[in-house]
Image (spheres, rainbow, N blue to C red):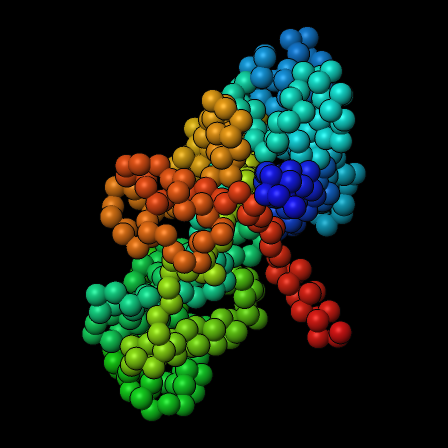
Length: 485
């Protein structure tokens, strides 16, 4: 088989951007429901608990447009391009009011509109033959994998990230650092653990910066020095490196540690303990668990990390190569759109916060609002479309969404398969810009722009595919099946 025949076979069997389409389909099939399941109940009256809303099944409609007379009709991508429309579909959620513990009749409520990826399951072109595509104004050779926002074709590029739930150890300028991207059901929390030149250990995560790691261990339940040492190592050389951190730690009990963390957050005394417990459960290593019962498991995980840090400082183990592709993952458009959807719903000023505010405001005016009446679906839609139109994403990322290059077919395919690094182009980053041996066969060694983005903007090799990955529940199921086999 010639190389040309091999390429033709690959295009027919897999396509050039099927990984993008598959990731979007996964978001629609299960990702949105997982995010909604995290909500569970929304308490509209926190003081009395009289009224709660239970969130149920998510359904996504077909791509539609609202006409001037108020009617709705389904549209094809080409109509969205010609009329400068957004190719999007409504998202509905079944919400059940619970009044004084009694469930009322559920309502199906529209919460927002989500952009539809061309050629995905939601797209009107899905499953059509070449002749049917031509009849509806579509190019049968168009690979899809992009969105249409206000008539403009936008591509959500791949984002290169450190692998989730895996500590990566580095040693630079007498400081040992450990990076952990802890992820659970799409929620990602970055952690940075450092061993300073003076021997002390610190951790940064959420809105906590340079907090004593020993204080965190005590707050999690390992109160005595002996408990901490026993969980870290039996090697006296390793424990000798730990003594500085143990000696300098002021907090001696779990209560003192929680009080110490609360003071770092500058919280009032009434709210301090509750907030610290919330941070320890929800934001510290969420991939291990987000309940109080998971604290000891988190403490043991951190002890293993400390053991590796101390062994690295003694030269007993080598540091990790952060540029090795086993330590990296590529975030596809489905995952990135899921992060955006989560932020719009669960963020500080997200849809749920606005629902609570709107309900309380209308009740004070003597009105009894319906569930749909307190949902600002248009505001949520605007937030999603704004990010896709500007490229400004959750977590301060920029340039995530870009205008699709249509100068020629090869340029289009190349753009749909491009990946960007989160590193700042204005800084040197010599090692990150160089071609790593593990990129060979996965990343194109030649195609990268000149100038400040050289080596930071990459393109997938011509036959590279990206697997969608597994969530924690799927991993547990697979491990169980392997053990039983």
